[in-house]
Image (tube, rainbow, N blue to C red; front, side, top):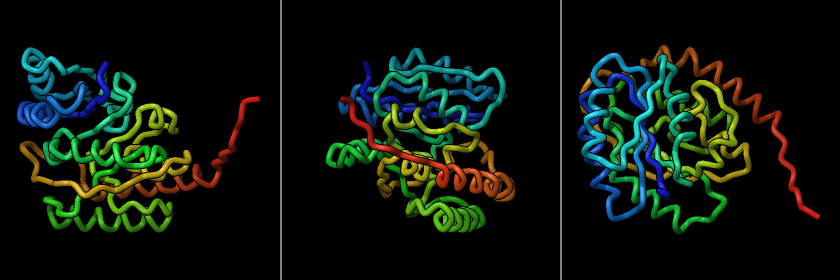
Length: 238
């Protein structure tokens, strides 16, 4: 059984699949027992064909496909549910996250307390457009003020977390943007780790600032309500 599952959600990322798979394999072979779980969110380009071809090259690769486009959070959750590793590493499928950072996160986990269940990537040198960086800075600041999650960058796609802890979290669309706050609500600790960030490999971004803002406001209110209504109680078996 793999000790680590790398979950990669994709939607119309045909050109980014081969190079990213090669980088994941290069980063982890000989360092960990791992599998790679790609979740194709009903892509309309050649993503599924590229993944089917790649299975003959990478024995670690497993492919899951959505019957209908369902969004990144659903793709991540379904990938985690299908994963066999006790720990999960996630990457965005556009190539902007560097798989070489996964061993760094694993090393941080090895020397950290067991109470830390999420190691969140922190893009300190972003390679996005100025408008996208400005929008993310505003969203991160607003989220930190309202949720007090003390996390500088929740939008970074590269994360390492315990599978069991993740599946115990409440699920809703766009939940992947609030993992630090949800983990802390569950009683776990979170550590932000500086990671590399790169320009998109090919294709176009699937998001814009306005679209993120419209859903983000409603999500912030919902997560704030969840935090206020949470209750944790220590138990012991007699």
